[in-house]
Amino acid sequence: MLANGTKKMKTAIIFNDSGPQIIRRSLGAYRVSQMMRDAGWRVEVIEWAMHWSHEEILKYLSKFEKIDMIGFGNLWMEDDFVEDTIRFLKQHYKDTKFLLGSPKPYQRNFRADVAIFGYSENVLLQTLDFMFDNGPPPKGRYTSTAPNTYFIDANADYPALDIPKYEVSYLETDFLLTTEPLSLEFNRGCRFKCKYCSYAYLGIKEDYSRDEDSIYNEMMENYEKWGTTNYIIVDDTFNDRDSKLERLANVVERLPFEPNFGCYIRVDLLISRPHQLELLTRARVWSHFYGIETFHPEAAKAVGKGMHPDKVKKGLLEIREYFMNKIGLYRGTIGMIAGLPYEPISHWQDSLDWLEENWDSYFYWALYITKDADTTTHSDFSVDSKRYGYKDTANPTVIDWAKEKGFVGGDYTLIGDRPKLDKYLMIWDSDWANFKDAMDFSDHYHKNYFQKAKIAAFELLNWVGNKDVLELTQGQMFQKKLGESENLKMINDYKRKKLEYNYE
Image (cartoon, rainbow, N blue to C red; front, side, top):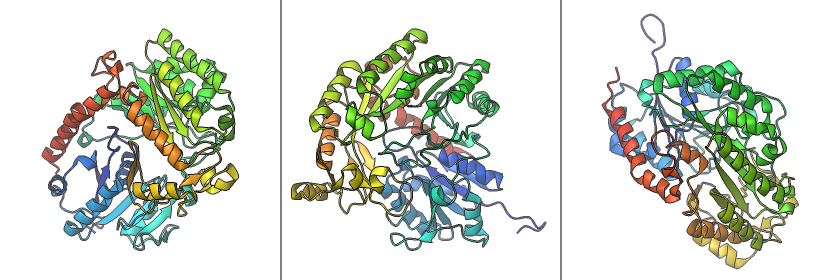
């Protein structure tokens, strides 16, 4: 308390990272930072935290007289990094409290004071009051995994669907680059409920999306301050409502610059609602990710996607042609899952053959089913696996393989080229395949097809504006080279600016 009776401003540092493969700022840490600043905190973000050494972190933190809280937006961070960093920092900041925030399950003891699972807007301020001002605890519990960490399931107990403010403002000390794409959020939740999906707020019928002026004002602020023109729209399904597309198209036509957008698109909706093509081209939303998952008719129906795959394939080719003819820009990345109901193993290869012959950018992943019991956010496959034909394997060969790979009893492992942070992974079996089959096929894709595919839709937006677009079509290896050179240069330059900045 200061002499005039006001509280001294508290200071927080939030670590953020987009993971080892994608170099992009995830939105959560910046929204939390802004909420805390509005509540009277001083907050700074350390971006690309996994690229900082312990010595660099300490040098940066030494710029602040006192640090009351250190937070981690750890959706994409490796668990080993989070645990090691907290352990290290506790040696130097014994009175500092640690807060974790993520839609990722917490399955090991990070020794944080509080961990919030899911969207935190409706519980964040109460949590801070609990941590620092002896306020009542939010609804939560201590778990057997982390007995000294207060765990809050925000998705279950403090749902944040209709939030009052979607806008995010960045600081000079965030050192944004003109060409880097920022995240833009229109609404929460998804109208659909695919059986394999474990995202929060599925089957939402209400429209909680933001208004046109708030979108325009946020984009203009970012353009005038940082020169930003590229965005990733982070909605689970951007084209679930025509109104959102119309709103963005209207905004784009008001802007004094030409933007570029990437987003998650449900392709069967786009095919069945062809008028959306015009809206998307008006809005310059030409970078798409399609979670198609399967080209097998029975499998598609089983997971909640009823359009016949032949119609989907035809529609994909027509969509690409439409965008190229209309605005000369397009990249659609397709996500596929090996292991969905009723699809035989041989059909996975048939789908991969079609993609190699007809498509530019695609991924194939194994079906993951979690048995985690600490959170309420689960796919239908996890909630009732037997109903959908999945069971724990009794095959000794598969069990031995899973133990060798670290899928049983492990805290962190790599699946193909993807980090999977779930030590309660189900080693499933079914009448059509098992988890090992699906994993082997995913590895087959990564070894033999990954380098053939062109740069994925969202990664492409990282380079529009500072690289020739034609050069970007040379293949995935170009992305890796960028990651090894220009991305690293960008991160090192960011660190240098943060370390040299004079905080008063």
